[in-house]
Every structure is written in C-alpha cells, then in structure tokens.
Length: 136
Image (cartoon, rainbow, N blue to C red; front, side, top):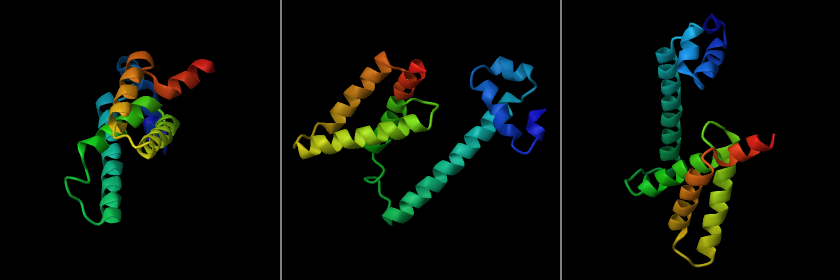
C-alpha cells in the first residue's frame, strides 16, 4: 500500500481526515495512523515547550497560565482548525487587537477575545480559512 513508500504515510493520513470507513476500505490501519499523528504532534509540542522553557529560563505556573492556553485555542479556532495559515493569520490579528486594547487603556482584552471566539464558533465554525475556501 502507499504506507510502504518513503513519504507514503502522509498520503495515508489524507483519507481518514474525512472518513474513517473510507480509510479502512483502502486498507489503512486508522488506529495506527491516528496514533502516529498524535505521537508526532506530541513530540513537536514537547520540543516547543522545551524551547519555550529554555528561552524564558524559568517555568512557573504563572508562565503557563490558563489564559495562554485559551489564547492558543482561540487562535486555532478563529483561524480555522486543520489549516496552517489560518491560525497564523488569527495570531497576528489577535495580537494586534490585544495590543490596541492595552494601548487604549482597557483591561478587557481577554473578554474581547472570548466574545470574538464565541462569535466565530457560532457563526463561522470553519474560521478565517473557511471564508477563504468559500470564495474559491
């Protein structure tokens, strides 16, 4: 099957993004591919955490606050889950908005991000990337 080729595991991942039954019908071990994807993403998350800790030089519970986690989830959701460019654009927009709100002297930047996140979840569940896909 395609998983025996050098970069074949990438092509194995494409079908089960949409449908597990289709991937199984193609002879792909869905559990193994999902476990591989989870392991690779966990590895890169660990590397990112190690680099962050090295850069900060001290990791305390205040550094890894729940607001940071919510901010990252907001970036992924607003940008569009399943894309690379969407969350990057959302990160730039969220950073710009929070800086403008802090310059304006308000402390409600987290509330504004939460409100925007709720609006995107309710009205644009595909995020910014979904808007771009509809225009194509």
